[in-house]
Length: 258
Image (cartoon, rainbow, N blue to C red; front, side, top):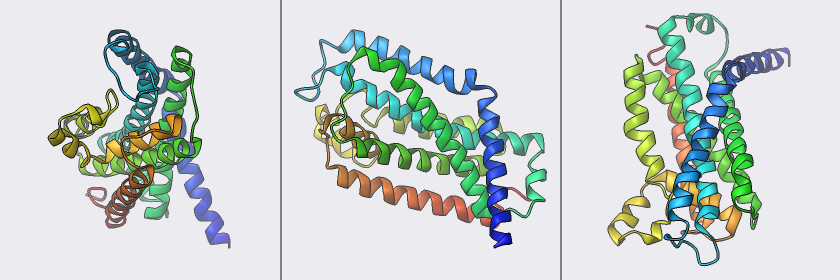
């Protein structure tokens, strides 16, 4: 029992350290992403509100808000774990964690947990700031919670993988710019994939980010491009695979002990 409590205390301490790391600069890590999302809403909503038709009963601004919220959750969950690891590796202070008796499960829980806190905090901020542009509806709110949590967890795990793999900031920037950003922007944040030609619809369905955003949007409107159960299956499977890879890399000490 004492050993279990000691391990939990270690996870709690590392989680607190990781949350505090981004919260102490919350103007940059929370407020700035919220402002970016608001600018997207102002520009795209103003320009396309009367020109883009999505679901029959949903205006374009209303349609856009959940996409921006989820995009903010995903991008910031990834940024938290990836930036923390790469900074620790480059500055050399990672050695202080390596000498602790924390298991790879403890590392995973703390880093991914802090990433989820940051992603959900930013997403909540985006929602609170943008909600007055269009009255919110919560047709099936349980899907909002499920996909927000799973999406934040998956991107936090993916950030761990990226942080372990990268050895310098250039590599991390490449991972984010050539993988995370394209998958996010091509996932239906700004449009319904049903408006695309058949080939690009098929391509979109290969992108797990599409299912996160489509399932999340289902919670607001009760309408989605695919069944939320299909989205749940794809996102849940993707999370398990990514988390398993991250845990295996942590267990083996990949690029941590040399």
